[in-house]
Length: 269
Image (cartoon, rainbow, N blue to C red; front, side):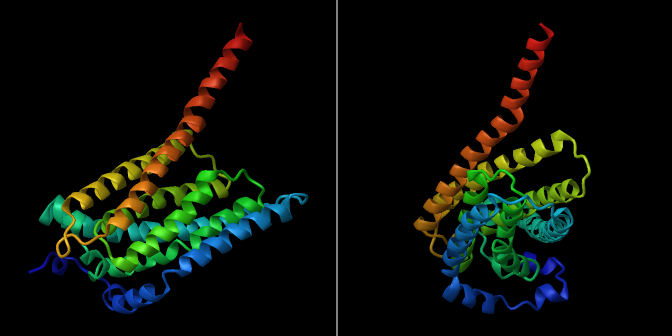
């Protein structure tokens, strides 16, 4: 009996037709480039439009937006992590890394598809930043574009490692969007919580890079399906994220706090 038969799937999960979804991405995954180009244009034109205008508050819409993404991410994290936990404990690390049943298993197939599609509406995060005239850093828009392109590309080929990538991202986003929801509601969130989220993102990049290394090592046309293009693109993406998130963590939580302490010390002296 397969592991998947021990995992209970809800009706909407088991009845989801992953073959139709797969066929759609086979023919339309290139749409991700159109979406990315449109996203970049909207960012540029939006910043030009808002340059001489008052920033918009949008606190309530942002709270609702973040809340919806938080709920979605929490549900996705619970379902995909349950699948991956059972895969690792039942079959070991190699099988969990090389697994491609994740895209078609009753418990996870809907969430794999929903995850891939979600990278398009998540671009809306930047719209709030532009309209509220907040600082837009390179990491933010670079991350959105490259994740969209790589996720759609990987779902099209149903490559090994996808279960790890999606599950980790669901978990991180569950915390991240919950944090955004609380902040948008005007509630104070302890600084260590924000630091924890960034550390989780850095950890995600380390694990993601490691998984791709293992995929490269165990790559097989039948038992560990992937392509060198996917492995190379994914590795460049994860390593660039690791560098950018590490720099962000240092500049946001270490450098500034150190500068602040220096200033206080000067004042005391």
